[in-house]
Image 1 (cartoon, rainbow, N blue to C red):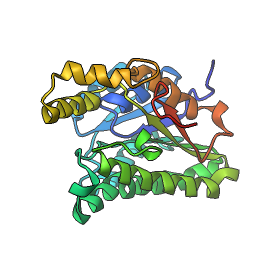
Image 2: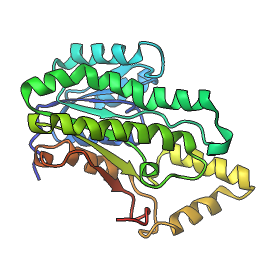
Image 3: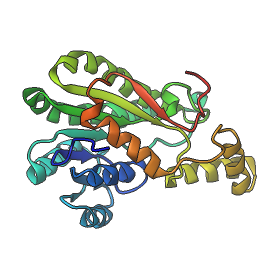
Length: 257
């Protein structure tokens, strides 16, 4: 299927690895000009060098002025931004009883407020051109809170509420706002969570992974490319009537409709 977005410009946050990188690669494969960004500047440039029309930008979105720096670099490289993919590093594992107000404030700042600044920088142009795609790489914790990931559950749920509210404002202007919720996708982040669980429960990491896979109806972890392909579709011309929603890419993990 031709997704109808060749020649469009996309800014993909935190795309030097994992789900962000998979999304950037999937968009580039559709002819989209992509800004690859992240704290690992050399990695961002290396990925961009492999993709036609791509630019690598080193930026720490959690640092003061990080969002503004990224917006400036992206607009300098590409001009208008048609697609904004929101993504960021997950907060440290912790249960709700272990986190305090300062932890929660940091999670909301990194997972909501920074992304809100990015949206604010590209949305006026999208509305003027009457075409735009806002997509957040979120978590299944938005729908079913994940044990021991309280900060992620809180911060990403706040972002979900913001994007849902925003989608209502811009739905008749050609701009969509959605979330894509990964389940257990085989990324470095998931590997680190498995290792942390193995250490906490004093189990071999292989046993933790086998247990995780057994809980998924598909009986395996997802591949980043599978997630990236779904993300690219939600950013496509064909997804123009999909907005204000959260779509799961989880192999059936979350036991709800």
